[in-house]
Amino acid sequence: MNFWQFRNQFYDLVCFNINQVYAWEPNFEKTNLTRWIKQNLIVKLRNSWYSFPEYLKTPNIQCFISNKIYAPSYISLHSALAFYNIIPEAIVQTTAVSSLKKTNFENRFGFFSYQQILPELMFGTEQKKFLKKHTLVFAIPEKAILDLFYLYPQYNNEQEIRELRFDEVFIQEELNLELMGQFTERMQSKVVRNRVNLLLKSYNLCLI
Image (cartoon, rainbow, N blue to C red; front, side, top):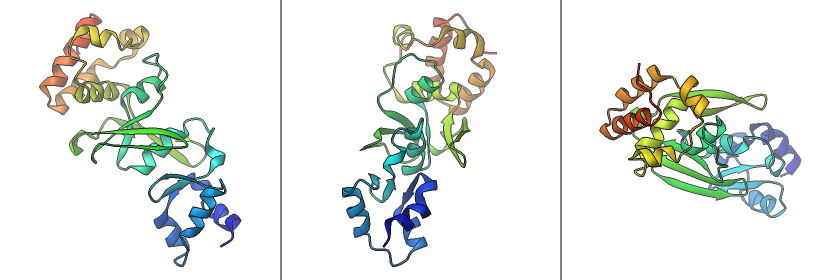
């Protein structure tokens, strides 16, 4: 197997899995992948998923890989809030939620963390353009906050919520309170509802 033929076939996909390889070439020998990994021609992302080292410094590549290697999932929680500049911290791992079981992956592109939520809570997302042909799936800001309240037990008092250091301009001027209220009711979680009330109290807000 000629690597450059292989590269021309899969490079524009950014990342790909072994099933796509076999669909292209049913007689493909998987040992080629092992050899190319050792030669730094491709990068293993997790079992059966691969990319190319040329993408290592591509902006937001971790978000794209996160979406692809564990699906269905979307970027949420601290990663989404940092992406929107709602929290100030630099995020050292890519955080996502999925209706599949909780898991983590680590590879040359970074550390990928997935928290589990119920399938019916997989809403409140939007797609963002990535490179020329691809998209990223993100929670919108309101859903990223609710996912955080739903999944992390420590955010159960005003002090802990304040220590998230939400951007004041966003909270006071851009947070969609009507949508926040609709999503809160849709989640049907007393815990989330109580934490939303703590957030509102902390910033002197009320739902529309």
